[in-house]
Image (tube, each protein chain N blue to C red):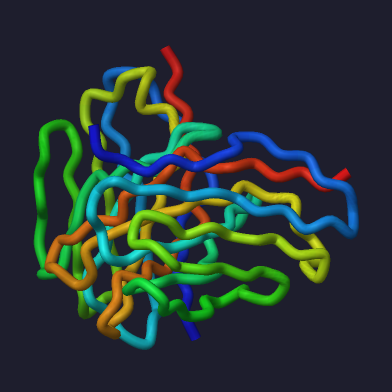
Length: 114
Length: 111
């Protein structure tokens, strides 16, 4: 079955540590996205990529970094510069700009900073 | 600025009908989406509207009025499994599928 796999599902980090969240898709989608979800707030866009080797900042990119070396993979690194990293992180993918085209989401990664 | 408003919480009874409203003020508009999200899980697609009017899909319907910046999701014959958050999202007009999300409406269905 095609889908998006995020790992790990739960992750604990000490302050000052970088951590990388994995996102892999086998849907052959060109575009991939990272959103952050906090209680009482909507999903906020961190980074997105429409094609391999290219990515753009979203609304809250500070303290995060990404890479897009392969079509299937879009890892997100939460750096020590991110002041409030505890959140639920969602990866998504789509075939860009195609009418009722729909974002497909992964199951999410919950990051807790101790 | 970009602003999407939804009620924070709603409650309803099993078998009833509930309407979840969404109003938006965005710099551009290229479609409105509704997603369902159970606690701790991924959002799943429910409906898409780009033209004014009602789209029906089984127990769920979604309505859009672009002139009013308004949409609603209508859930009929509520079931306990419909207890979830419902996210309204607007797609930007640029050549991407970036979505701007509202805060979501948490619906609790009681027996």
